[in-house]
Length: 146
Image 1 (cartoon, helix red, strand yellow):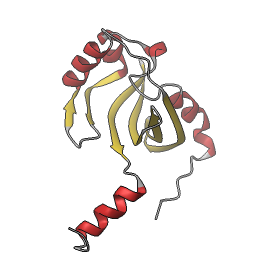
Image 2: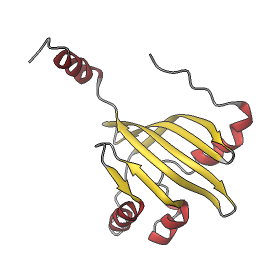
Image 3: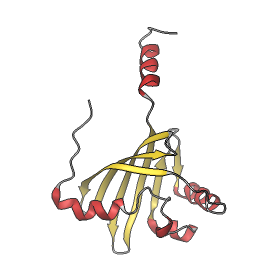
Image 4: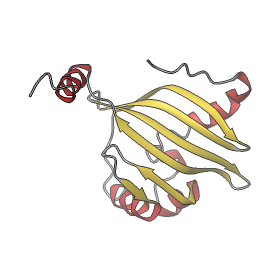
């Protein structure tokens, strides 16, 4: 069921650079101010949150500005990174993020290498349901439970 995802050896350097920047907006060494976040995102950046809601760059920047006024310590663990070249200087990075050992999300970021450095073009986080919850949902969808 899962696709076979392999990062080609020629992308090892790119993968290493991008992994050091993820999870995006949670790495204080890359910045914590609105100006920092503006520098790391392309002007047409947008994201899809775990809820499925789409968010504009301006909305995300406002939320980040608010979040960093009273930063909290987060227990984050990212793994299973893969990188794929989409076009010249445009890369898809995927990984799994565990937050506070209770929330698991699949993350996707599209990165562009520019003369100014790396820019985030798009980001999506999708919550992974527990296997038990998923089976129940599938049974309901198939009419076996109500």
